[in-house]
Image 1 (cartoon, helix red, strand yellow):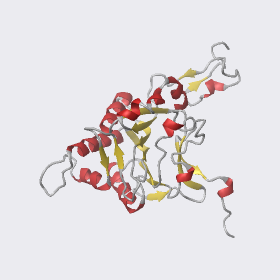
Image 2 (spheres, one colour):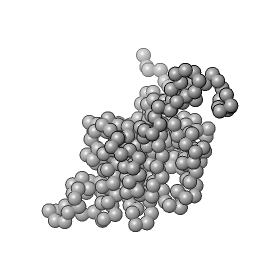
Image 3 (cartoon, rainbow, N blue to C red):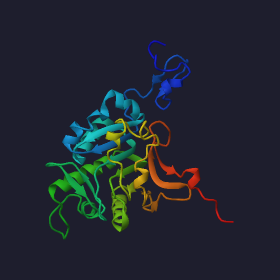
Image 4 (cartoon, helix red, strand yellow):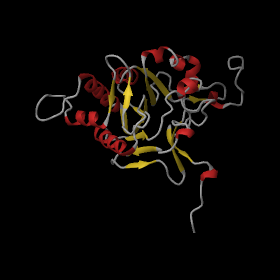
Length: 283
């Protein structure tokens, strides 16, 4: 009782049954101790953001909110891949969310970092990498600038650390918007045919982690863990499945948003419409 004074004795497994067991009803034991978490959020930001507003994200207090998610703060895709390798070793992740800046026009882009290792991905850049994976000269192939190529290689490395039938979420503003968003989905499927990919047609709540207690997913300020603020939800999230089929998450029962669950399964799930939004089928 003294050790866990803040918890009720009626709470099972320290209120975290995903990672703890409570066999004798005395004390929750973390059976994942030492094992990498199955899910990772990569927040790609500037060094100034990482040292400033995002710096509390990985404090002990914030990690209490993370649940089944590992959080990586990185300045580039290259930096993110390096941290992923150190964390997972020979194992793989089930779900990876890459949070980075996007664009506010009709161009599907996601942007990462500043400085020598920074860059941006577009359907054209990623297609050039697919067509010319060694970035060779000649043969009529497009050669990428070194920084884009190196980040594309790192991006591919991150994808290879996701298990088959896993999920990759590109949480960047407008990465899946319009015709360019379709092209982005197609080329990402070429790179990663064995996983599901999610792209946002609207704004992603990039600063969710800085603005809601530095937690991930469901927190006091964002109890539903939505990756797009309701006020910005218009086009909805797109899913590219393992067959390359692109669908919008907006459906009869889904509102088009995507949710990160810190404790419940599945860890990533489409957001359901509120009961007031549901309409009865016509007879």
